[in-house]
Length: 365
Ligand code: BMA
Image (cartoon, rainbow, N blue to C red; front, side, top):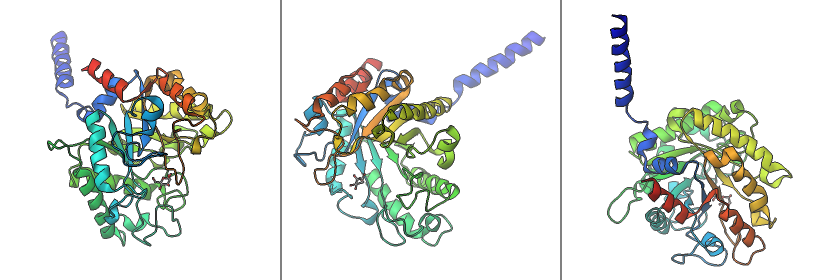
C-alpha cells in the first residue's frame, strides 16, 4: 500500500516536472543563443560598432573591430538617449533611422543587439549627467511628473517596437536601463534616489515596456558600476529576479588599476554565483580603457579576466565602449599601437566574434 502511494506520488512529481512551463528565458531567441554557447566562449561587443569608427562614419560594412581583428563583434551596443524627446539623432549623433537599419543588419548577420539609455530629465530638461535636481521620486507612479515620464517610455517603446526585419520579423534585443546607479553621476544614481525608489523605477519601466507595450522580445540587464565587494552590496539596487535576465556589471576603474584585474575577477565571481543560482546570464556589460593608452591592456587586463577559469566557463559577454574620434575610443583602430594586442586578445579561445558565434550556434542546432 505504502509502496503504491509512493509510486503514485513519484509518478505525479515526474509528470509535473515534465509539464512545467519552461522558464521564460529559454523562449527568448537571445537567451537560447546565450545558453547554447555558454562555456564555449564569451561574446565580444562594441558600442556603435557598425555606425562609425575612428576614420570613417556611416560606411556600409565597416567596423573598427573588423578592421583590426578581421571580423565583426558578436554583440552590437546602441544608445537610445534622445529617443524619449523624439529627437532625430541619439546623444552621440546617430540618426535613429540609420540605427534602426543597423540594428536589423546586426541581427540578420547573427549578432546580438543591446541598448543603453541615457534619458534627459523631465524635470529640468537637462541630460543624464545633471544631478542638480532629484528626478526619480517625481517620475514614479505617484510622482508629479509621472505622465511626462510615460511619454518618454512610450517613445522608447515606439522605437523598440519598430525594430523588425524586411519580412516583419521582430528583432529581439537586450535592454540595459538605469545603469551605473551605484555611482553618483546620473540623475538616477546613488546621490539622487534611494534604493527603494530606484527599484520601483526599474520595475515600473520593465513592466510597462514588457506588459503594456508588449515588448516580450526583450531581455533586461541590471548593471551597476563596480562599487561592491559582496553579493549583499551588489544587490543594493537590484529590482528583482522577475524583471532581470542578465546579471551585469560595468567596470572601467578596476581594469585601469595595478592588479585591478584580480578585483574585477572577484566581482565577476559574485555575479556568476548569483546568476547560476537564479539560472540567469552574467556579463561585463561595459568596460574598456579610455583611448587605449596601454598597448597591452587587452591581453594583460581584459585577457586575464576572461581567461579566469570560472569567468571563461560562465560569462556570456563583454562589451567595450564606443570609438568616437571627437570624444574618446575604447577599441584600437588600424595601425594604433594596441591593435596587434587587441587582435591577440580576440584570438584567445575564450573570445567569440561574429563568425565564431554563428558557427557555434550552427553546431548546437
Ligand atoms: C559616455 C560617452 C559620451 C556618450 C555617452 C552615451 O560614456 O561616450 O560621449 O554620450 O557615453 O553614449
